[in-house]
Length: 405
Image (cartoon, rainbow, N blue to C red; front, side):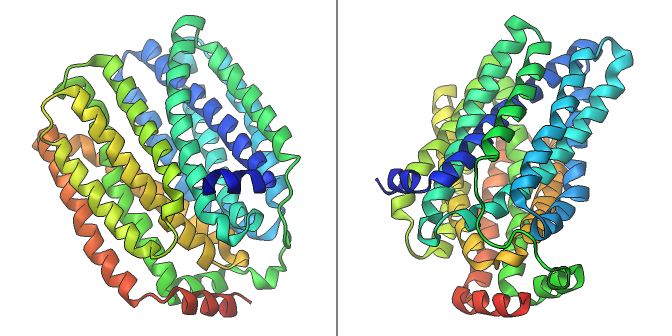
């Protein structure tokens, strides 16, 4: 299998993968424990909503800055520092007692999200510098597998640990995860110039390149529109389990496990994604849209789980295609800022979408809203197709390389 061959050959990426996996598992532990802690202290679901909103803000503020730093300084050192800085932050949650400590929870949540806002674009911009271009499709498949594994293992294990062993242990384990991740990252090597000349990386130049490139505009448009539907998905998953099928917390856990399994399964099909990645992106998003429409009419919970697996299976494949195209087209000197900008706008759109889902559910029932989401996915592909038809990736890559130097 091509993906296993790429895995064996990219030993440097293996370290980045394991660091990201351990990091992600630890973050999931903390996320579950924070939700439980807030509910224990306040008994209010609104407090959890505030935390979700707080988590979105740092991406808008800090992800672009992280991208600039990633283009100017050593990505390896940045990743290690971000992990180490987050250790005392997450451990401070151990000492929260009573409602008087709520401000600590909110502040630490904001700071930890800020760390993630830094970490994500730096890590993503490192991948195309670490692996061979012809293996990017396989490596991005492994990235989807990692997302799925973290979603399944992190959420389920975090819930079990929090319930049976107390809310302090997940924070301690997260701190240990950051430390282990930093150690693993110390062993990686990111080739290429790690420190760029300032005059080659000024913000005015990057803005000019961003707005004058059809490729950049296309990727940015996708980063804005797709999360608008994805955010509603995240809310609907919980509503389907709790309200539509009445499965309670067990149903929520199974739904998230299904989401993760879909991402994992998508990673095994990288061998089929060789050419026509833009066309495949459109096809998979259309399939994902139809799957959401199917979810709106499924009569029983087990069938709903299979549909959810199929949704993230198609979504994972479209993510693999888009991420690979971006990594191949964006020049090394612009990757940090570009992925930082993408993280900022996509997470902002995701936050707006999740917030609006609550209001939409006052107007539409869950099945109606799921149908609307499916139609939205399919409608987006019409605009994507118009942009893709005009997009010549070879010429765009050459043009961007020329403007970035």
